[in-house]
Length: 302
Image (cartoon, one colour):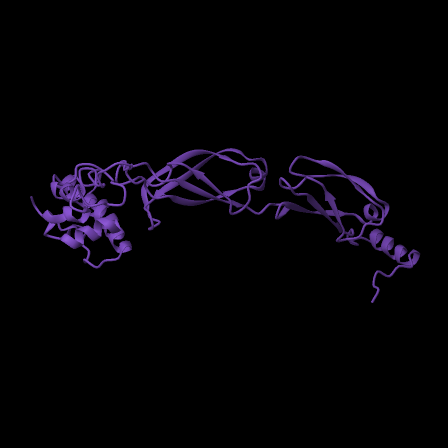
C-alpha cells in the first residue's frame, strides 16, 4: 500500500496554514476537475486532491497524519488501540485510497455508537447586491433577476451565460436587508449541495420621494394664494393619490403628516414649498408693485 503525501499533492509546505491549504485545494480542484480537464488521469488526480484536502483541512485528521507520517501502519494507536483515528468531522466523498481507509476508516470517521456519516460539504455561499425601486420595496412581490456566475473570492465570471431566478421580495424591505435563496450559490466541488445565494437589497433614489428610515418625505410646491387662503389638493403616495387639506397661512418648510402612508410602520411627511410666479411681463410686474403698496408686510424679524 502506497504512502500518500497529501502536502505534495496539494503543493503546500507541511507548516502551511489552513487558508493556504484551502486556496491550494481550490486551485488544484479547478485544474483537474473532470468537467474541465479531459486528460485520462484527471479524474484520479481529482480524487487524490479531494482526499488530501479532506485530511489537511481537519485539525484532528491532520494531527494524526502528521504524527504518524510514513509510519501510517501504526496509526490505529491514535484511537486508543482500536478502530481508526478519529477525524472529528465530516467525510466529503467516496472512492478514497486504501491508505486513507487504513488510517481513518472507510467513511473517514471514528467507529463506534453515536457517530453517523455526515453529508458532503456544501458549496460556498454567494453574495450579490440587488437594486430595486422604492415601489418594489414598498409593495414586495415576484421579480425575475439575472446575474453572472462568478468564481468564489475572485469576482471573475465562470460562465458567460446569465443565470435567471424568480424571487419574491418581502413587502417593506429596506436597504441592507438580505434575502437568502437556498442552494442557489456556488456548486460544491465535493458533490454536496450548492451553497446559498444572499441578495442584499439596495433601494434606488426616487424621482419625487426621499426615504428617511420608514418615513417617506415629499416636497409639495404651493402658490402664494394656496398657502395664504388654504385649499385641498391631491398629493401622490405609494398607495395612490389622497386628498390633503392645506390650512390658510401655511409657510414654506412646514410639514404635514400623512399617517401610515410611508413604508410599513412609517408615515409620509409632506413639506410645503411656496413658489412665487415670475414677474416676467409688465402686467405681473404691476401686480407685484400693487401688492407692495397694499400690504404692510415684512417677513424679516431680525
